[in-house]
Length: 239
Image (tube, rainbow, N blue to C red; front, side):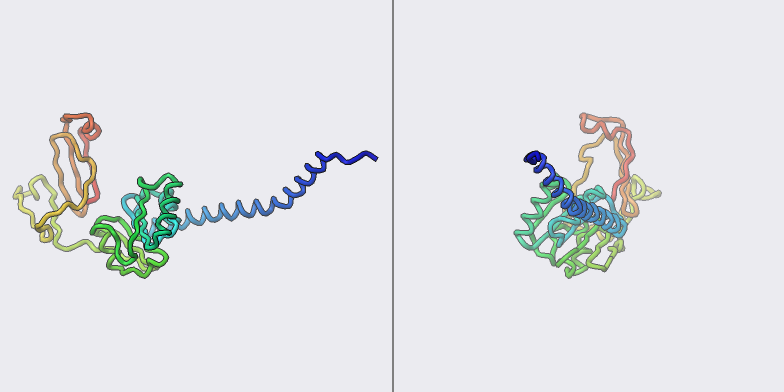
């Protein structure tokens, strides 16, 4: 009787162990795939609810940036996460950094969950999750722009368009060429709300505004290369 080969015995033992572990490996892979699919499905559902795929979305209470990462992969949103616990903030920043999104598409700040560190009317949407679901709805509506949406827990609110906003539909306000605005909200002291591209643009140019949108027409004269992409362009912006 020939002695058993140690190498073949080891290979046989490894194959047997692998066959036993294979169902576990497949189960883990399946659960991971299912979790990613569920995350994508949840993200798409939330995007439909808030009605925005671009702009700024605040996510107070999003521990670990789980929702923020899902939304980042499903949209072009810039995500702002605010958490109260310093350890959770550090962990969320690390996860966002590992995903290659920290400081570009995803930002994490430490702060209370009843007050967001964002200016008025600057975000396109707010989605409050976890312990932040108890935050005041008025606080969420404060930071979204008119017609923006705030989802606090199961409650979805749309910020109304404010009365008193005047349209400037022609170069001199209206067809009568009388450059006097009838706006009752714009009052001093005037403060910068936000800055947006293009900061440098060709000449001549004219801007008109109506229904929360700004339309700009850029002319044929560019003094520097940075202005050339906007030559002879008509562009629309969210106002």
